[in-house]
Length: 268
Image (cartoon, rainbow, N blue to C red; front, side, top):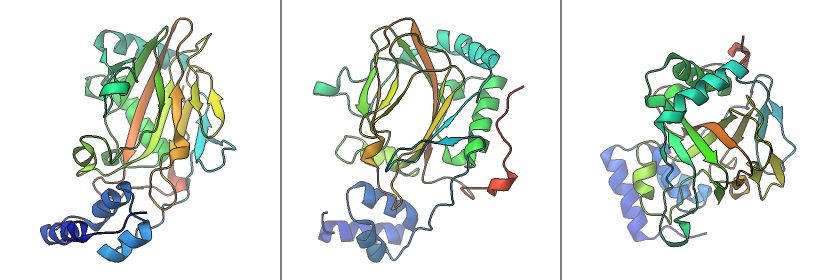
């Protein structure tokens, strides 16, 4: 791993003087590939260990090196249908943080910024996701929906921000690195469209209402390459998913509830 040279140590001194949070600096430095122990010593900060994950009715998947859960019936059939109807007229081309050269056709789906719509079901589902994972809403990004027609895909990728990509500082600044991903299938797909964790060796066929939830970071807070996943090409029909990402930084307490205070995400 790289050493902290004089320019990075000057960056640390400048940002400490500016009053930047040490946790935010820790996230940026470790995302750049510096060893967590080295960073902790340099900024005199030791991140608190994350609390044990508790997802009501979630099933921990036997994936070595990846904290991954599945959750059946997170959304009812009626909720899934209503959300599909809601997002369909609001789609735009999906984007990535690096679309140059070979990455130009890496993601061919369409996206709806669901959290920006004034819709009570969208707001309720967003809140349900936060409560299920037990993370305060201020740590979450705007909930989105992605639509894949036949042949469309999102090639193998991780959800964390890569230091080598343009705009890295802008993406992590103020919010930090991505932590958890909460994804929900809104429809069944008869052919293709699986979410395939290529390095963990597990794949999931889209099943209406099912959620997949995974931690994008290692226990030391650095990005976990074993979370690499592929939204495989749809072979028939279409695929619609909801996605909400969480960050290392937000307002107030990150985990506002103890595990026994969380309610199971049951639909009526």
